[in-house]
Length: 247
Image (cartoon, rainbow, N blue to C red; front, side, top):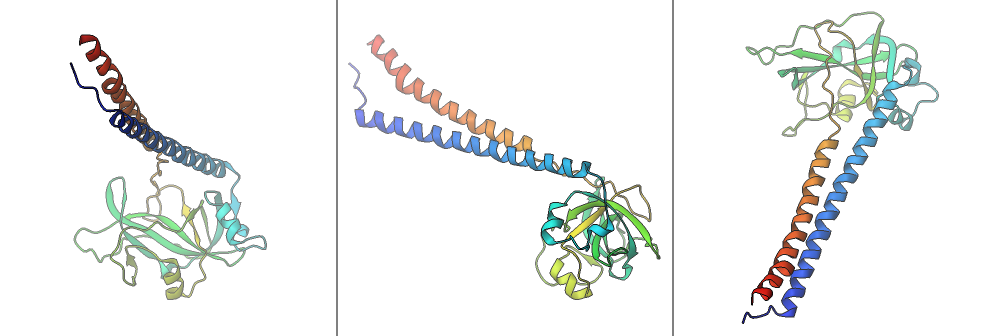
């Protein structure tokens, strides 16, 4: 005659199974929530970009403020002004179409308001024989028109710290760049759009929302939850009953 599992062990296994199911289901729901947040953010971006373009008076005008600018991120903008070419910066280790090169950044003085904003102008290849060589680009003098959309300050890549100077840099720190140039740049930038001109490509990579990743993780957590429940039913209910009938 087979020995029956003590009641306290059965209760312990039940508690462990319930806890495992609860934790995995919670993690799955959390991943679904993160996916919903990113989907809402992507929809907000799409709605912003579909609105009518702003003009240069939006930046630095009487109604402009930090909160207002943050609310206008991803809005299209068309502005006239002048390049501050002497402060151009080349962010290295940036890729476009799988090729290494620079993202070229130049401050821009808006004609209507005199506001200074950083423009992410485009991508240029780097020299493989001379890493200190700057790419050949054109920066027109006089008044020009820039078409793009408002964007956050350029994203950072991993670096080893320290103060960065000179035209070639790994990252561009807003506070440090303001101090070095003496320019009261806005905390937002403009991502210039348009065809390849002035030695620059503007096929900016589209940042994926990552919703699919979160849905995949949620599926894994829910699958693990179902596995825990099935294993508990099999080993704690089905198997003992089969053994009892056989005995």
